[in-house]
Image (cartoon, rainbow, N blue to C red; front, side, top):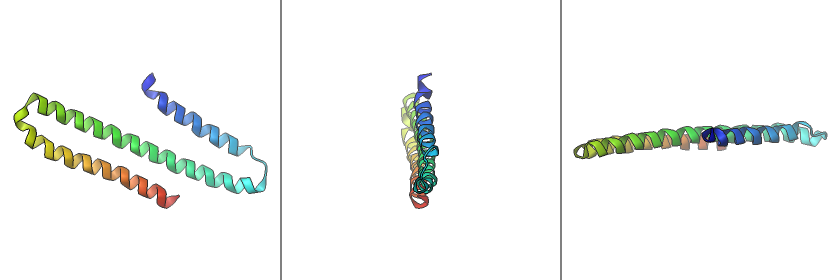
Length: 104
């Protein structure tokens, strides 16, 4: 239950921001509402991308370290592909960050 608590908190905060902007009554705020919802959606998507990247990196490192612990002689054969995989996962997260800033 506690593993899903940060995700639940993010959803609650997101809908609190959206609801507060939905009940605004001035015309100038209406234009700001659309823009602010767009920014919130971009950075919420970035958070999901980062969460996926971190989860994948931690699982890859965990499996690689477990393999090295079981067979220390294979450390050289495991370490290089693991580092390459981690770099590719991190590049996807950086791509999501750059695309979010370009769209925003």
